[in-house]
Image 1 (cartoon, rainbow, N blue to C red):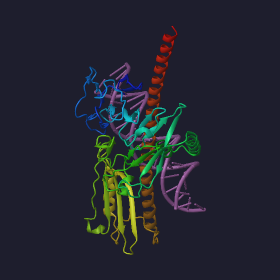
Image 2: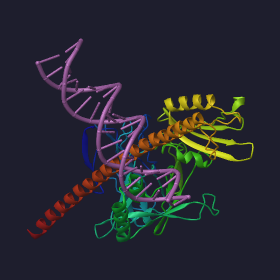
Image 3: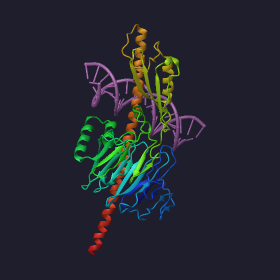
Image 4: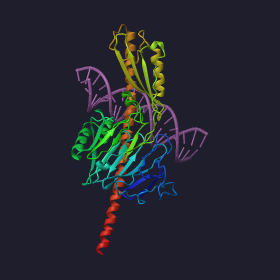
Length: 417
DNA sequence: CAACAGGAGCGTCAGTAATT
DNA sequence: AATTACTGACGCTCCTGTTG
């Protein structure tokens, strides 16, 4: 783990973060976190504001044009961001202060590429004070706000009927949920089964493909999805870093493309039916650029009776190769790959066929279980990362509160003297 | 440099929860 | 009730760091 430095911003938010570049964007800058092997692209400030400091430890502290003390005080002032990216996609801690109404809105977040992220809004302000600003989250990200009672309240995801084009569609609205309901629901689910997927869903309640979250005026937060893949549903089966190449952060009405927030992934579409023996079989291979060793096959075939088969399978590179070899080599007289297509129960004519069928089913089951185990482990790691991130944020919050208490005590003592 | 320990990742099995 | 999905546990391999 990298060395952590501590720094307290003007908002009183203390953060522990890797000793990497730190930048505060000048007027309305996109928050850009690097990851997935991309260069450590920090907040892409086109020009540095007066007061910008480059520190000896490599830290860059950019000052707002509106205020050199990083305080945003008016609606027309600037939006600031401090992003701390790290090569290899490790933890990045981001501070964002967004002007909204008469009060500045400070957000502290820990963002990891392809990992759960935690974005906190301090008490009193609430997420609704974002106005029309937009925050981009990675898959499984967490947004919660601390209310006046000091408790942490999760944000609830509510599906709406608003599409990006304004028509009725599949947009999602974030709204502050009631803490008791959410915690009770979470406890119930945890009591049933410690499913990492469900826990994460409960924790994050975010869209898996890098949703664009528009934090609208009022108590709701609108989430839009800007899909770079044309909304192919099959792509949603792939890794969470897929289809993230074209995300946009909109701050104060200005849109910024944030390809660096999550590493862009390549989705290769190819028809795998060059082989004449595989007539009617279409293969869609989705390759994640970040983890090029894996791919997802979605095979579609149409039998002579018009029956259609669809088999999505996520495979490693080795599996992929073996899979393609196997399917090519085991075509039946109907031209369909016997080991892939989920055909209705066929009449077993002899023990050899029975054995083959049993073997095939076992192979398929093992393949599925293998992939399920991988997914489960990935979820488990994400879950652990998410918890670690939350611990980091809460620790920072705790430190800030301790500091605040300390200063208030000092102030009180001085007044009494 | 070889031997060893420890950690991480993987595949498989089995049991259970969730879904159909 | 049957099927599917999820996950703990186990054993294995590979890699890295340490030790003699």
